[in-house]
Amino acid sequence: MTTDRGQWSSKLGFIFAAAGSAIGLGNIWRFPYIAGENGGAAFVFTYLVCVIAIGLPVMLAELALGRATQRNPVGAIEAVRPGSVWKFVGILGVLTGVAILSYYAVIAGWTIGYMISSALGKPIDFGAFVSNPVAMIFYQALFLLLTIAVVSGGVEGGIERWAKILMPMLLILLVILIIRSLTLDGAMRGLEFYLKPDFSKLNYNVIISALGQAFFSLSLGMGTMMTYGSYLKKEDNAVSSGFQVAIFDTLIAFMAGLLIFPALFAVGKDPAAGPGLVFQILPDIFKALPLGNLFGALFFLLLAVAALTSTISLLEVPVAYFVDEKRWTRKKAVWTVGIATFVVGIPSALSLGASPFFSGIQIGFLNKTGFLDIMDFIWGNFSLAFGALLLSIFVGWIWGADRALAELRQGAGDFSWQGEGWKWLIKIVCPVVIFVILLNLFI
Ligand code: TRP
Image 1 (cartoon, rainbow, N blue to C red):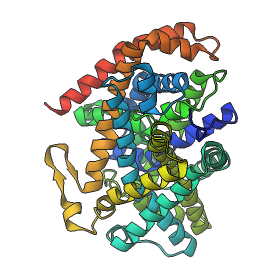
Image 2: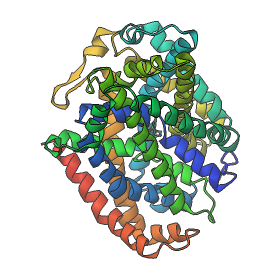
Image 3: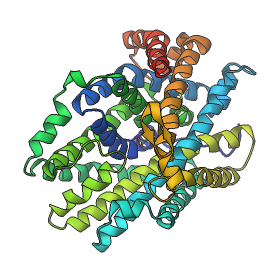
Image 4: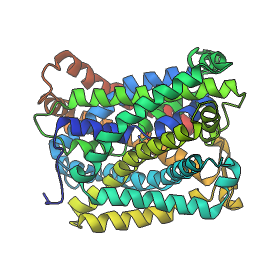
């Protein structure tokens, strides 16, 4: 073990950091726009089923493997099955981390642009903003630099301290904004779209999007939770921590929907507007508030922080890999991966109008247009589901569900019948369901 590892100072430290990883643009930017594109309440319902039946079991599997081995994803798998091809699952996780971070930083950069514009009281024209190449690359780079700065600080000094202070503030501000959104004229139709399921809207796209969103939002499928679990102490209760993180994450996503959809219908915009949805609708909510600019600036600040606690966790996986396996110093790992991520992210930054080529590139049968959208599907949806499939097989069958369960039970108190249920979920339900859903993609 190298000295550049670390450990959470307390169980609460883990919960805040893991919740900080889970809660981010996935909840507030991605969830509403994917729900809007996929028909609203039917998607929301499917998403909740995926979180409970698939997401939670995979979360516990990652935490168990991480804590048992005290390693990054590649090292954890090597520790269980040295020299086997399973190592590839860890490497896929490291690559997925870089790929997701590359476009996530672009969207995260928008939040800074919007924060500044709200603070100055100068509204942004969304279309003009995202097709300005200089602005896009500037904010993308700025956000990556912020991430690099925090991750250089290490586990306790950096990640933990930030998350503790700022996540609760986001919750409070959301409540205030939801009250305003729900009291706008015409809000009820939005509520209906969001909460009254019309199951005739259920189709394959809805299901794979809901599954992918569950992994994305809970930060699963690429070893983030495994890495965070590796900093847990043996006497900590990994099971209840995992549950709390999942509940907190789902609550915030649910609240983001409560904020966006009533306002959306109140001002008569299209719920299927795509990745720009939230950024186009939020300014309308702030306009309807006294001191709207102040609320706007504060909201985008907190959103930027929520995104930062997520980008930190995305960067932490490849960094932990290079620190543990290649004996790099933390600093060298952070800068090398950070710069590589910036370069990989440039096409995404230019893909909302700045570059006709990257904006127009298409995968027809997936209905995806633009480099960023395609990256998000390949890495933020497919690769996570694929990673989760392999991880559930690895933990359930190769490492062995019994061993994993013994690890989970350490510090977890009474986890007897629930533990038996978990074994069944991770060995059978997760692999079969994810496999069937992914298989359909190719048919
Ligand atoms: N879950 C975060 C969000 O909702 C994004 C994220 C952070 C993530 N780490 C991850 C997604 C690992 C997938 C895998 O914004």
